Image 1: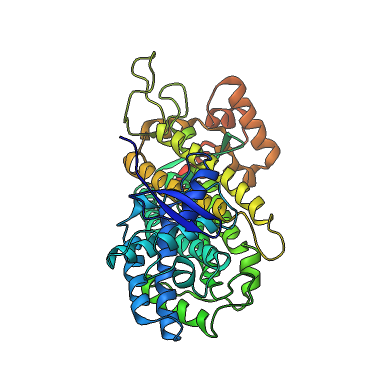
Image 2: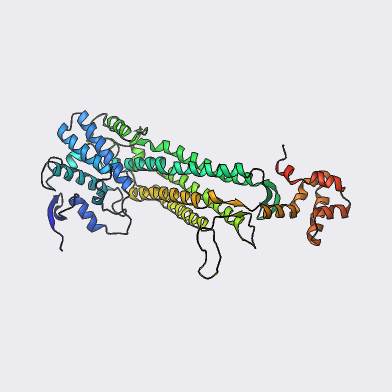
Length: 465
């Protein structure tokens, strides 16, 4: 069946819009002119824009420039959008105008048409609410779109990523506590080093994630500043005095976050350094996670020809040709996610530096990459935690054997007999494939009793106890 259309008008003239669509002329032009890629504008951005429209309508009414009837229409429609009731009517791609104007107008048009439906008016009639004159009143895309990114990023990080990181930190903390008495050989340069506990090793991972958590959370402070009320270039032209305070107060009520009007709207509209900073903290989380899963991959490599100190859950067959093979697949999935996020950060950094004069024209890319990174990291952390970290067990026999055979235990003897003699013992033991104890006694550098007292892996791993 062929689709039916209605005729809509905008400042450029008439255009055909699908009859069922709640969007209007400007959205339809964007669909035609920017059929690029598969990446749609994230719904989190749409919801944030809807909350801005809702708050603007209330503020404009409070400031007596929008009547109560139109304000109520906008509030009702915008709330429905923010609740996810009309997701199918936001079809635009990320790769559009760099300001996000078409997406801003997409939201304005859907609100206008929802109001028309509510009052039994034709779609596209702009009655009783006009998308520009009423829904977009006291606003510009240049102040609403970056504000929507701030709101969406703060909301998404706080509600999804940070809670998952808390769970990951807790899981690592439990492993640290459970493994605090398992003494093992350390490794530097991927070569044997002095002992530590397996709990110590995990504590490093736990602290890395906890520090990343704090960095990300602290970065949100800068995003609480909103440039709303700056309109086109930051001066506030066409917005009533105190509009910024009124709209931000209403957004705080709707979102329950401590947003505040930016004291210098020019800075936040012309550049997006706060968003670049938050993205960089997501990248640092990815860097930490990549280091951690690479450690786990090394410690679990084997099972018979590698380090094999950790035993990972066996979730699925690892090979189409080698029977019984099991691979560290959660590590590999996380590594790919982290690599992707590091690349997305580079794009955001370049986009942040690419603004010109009073506006940065990479807004959709910045918003998309941030929200995409949050999703990837949240999902990867959850998968890695549930399918791998919670089920890791130590291979105590392998750990014990490697510890007892390590040449670097000789380090504890160096202060007693000197670096040169300690080195002689290690070299002799390695060359002749004998124990450190045998080499030390053969060289007559230390008595059996002194050797047994000093070379104590448990004491070496806990030198201050």
